[in-house]
Image (cartoon, rainbow, N blue to C red; front, side):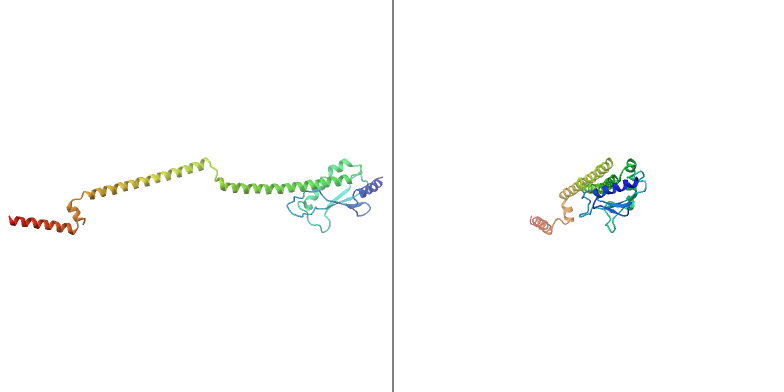
Length: 230
């Protein structure tokens, strides 16, 4: 009874997957699966990966599960966002609920459909994770760029430090202005004192010239001559 159901299912699969199914022997075959994934993978001209589901009927199938394996076609390039070395076991395990639900019935078509969905979801999740990381990097770069224009964020500590520095600068400027004012007053007092110097002080400082001295001498001689004549 089991073998008859296997042959019948195999004929149905031939009509559903005419180009994708390949016989290995009477009880084993492979079905090529091409996941329907977004083209926004981050790499131009990225090829859609093809995976092979190998199905082997045990004698009592469908009353017992088929033997399954997942592989890549020979010489196929490694697909983006998928690594069968790591993903084979989880993908096969994801088929366990479907197998349990369909024991006693032909289930290969359902298994192919379920596996294709699992692969698509896995790839989409990884594409989304890559895009999320790129978005986060872009946001961080934008935040750094905006920080150049908005300056450093003001905190209580930074404000207190700025105020202390500002008050110190004001005090230093006022001290300089007071010193300059006192120096100006001192120079003014010195100039005023020089204006009140006596004749002797002016002469000692060299502020009275030779001509003034000669004029004084001539005046003295004239006075002496006047005294002689009288």
